[in-house]
Image (tube, rainbow, N blue to C red; front, side, top):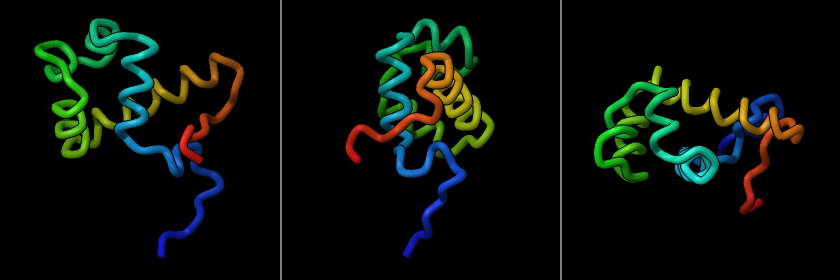
Length: 84
């Protein structure tokens, strides 16, 4: 059984929710300009992005950092999973 991670601001938030939130906030073009990966620039889709991000730790970390920065900029602090 997984343990609670109270100090992890991304605990309980799926990678899919992160990508969908960033696309809704910024759009694919902005994501592609900020994080240089092909799946954001050429024929972007959530599915292709998830496939790449799950295999590529450096890219996933950049996406997570951008997500956290957006939520901190909104003044909300750590994001919360809308499904919880």
